[in-house]
Image (cartoon, rainbow, N blue to C red; front, top):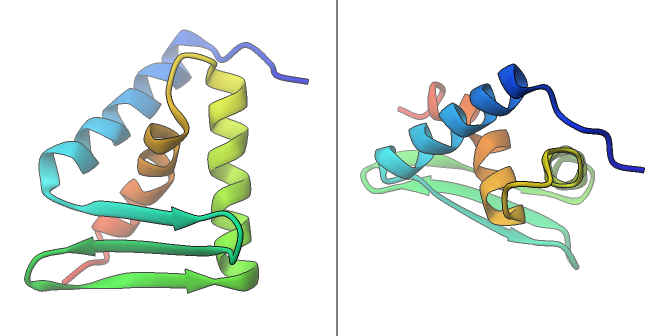
Length: 88
């Protein structure tokens, strides 16, 4: 059951999505394998698979279902935004 997201939380989610959109970072997911790749030109990115990827995807699904206003792709960007700080 999806819960309505507080407007303040939605603002944070939108900010995280904007950070990823403005950074040149790409987030690629495969729900079947599962895998997640977070990449940007010229820096070492992240590749997750199996359990680690499933945890990422579960969080993205939670945001997607609860926010109801954003796409699954944007939900993945919101989850990926903290990884950007760790990219060299």
